[in-house]
Image 1 (cartoon, one colour):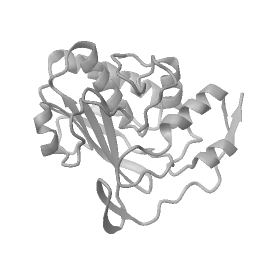
Image 2 (tube, rainbow, N blue to C red):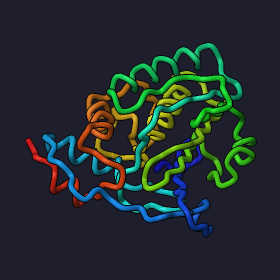
Image 3 (cartoon, rainbow, N blue to C red):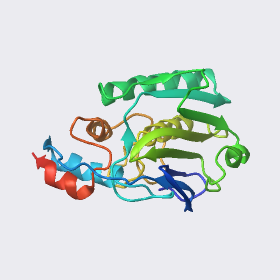
Length: 236
């Protein structure tokens, strides 16, 4: 998680059936159970290590329990605010790339409809708290997702309109990718979109592609714990 003024922070809100205020958001839960019979999966050691550093839990929010959270339905992405032609071209390319990595499990598509389940706002920082009241101060980007029984079903992404060039594209790409359920940063790879320190990387590294594909593979289920992942992973 990037903590300084130019950096990026993300949060997660968990929704379920009984209501209480916890942390950054509303927590309502019928019980977030994990899969009872995980299947095995072949994965190399570096991919497994990187996946565990990025995919389990989150750094902010009402529930940071270290389990897998991801979408199980298609994402309808709606853009708001000061979206330039260059932004739109970059977002379309990012969406196409992500769709190639998530396989048959989910598809991301842009929409102008009010039934969008993921909204991306490119606005001045002063407007951030009007969209997400719990947003951390002095950040360039922020993503907030809501899940029920560890299945993400809605989210909001904030991007500072003060950014330009590769830094702007980096923040768009990182936050959009984080919204899939990869909510932690890492210091392992400096060329990664998830790199914890300041970055202007705009392309996914091969390691990024591997863990995005792994998250949306058949063997990975919402609610999977790190212990279960260790038990099912056949390290190559």
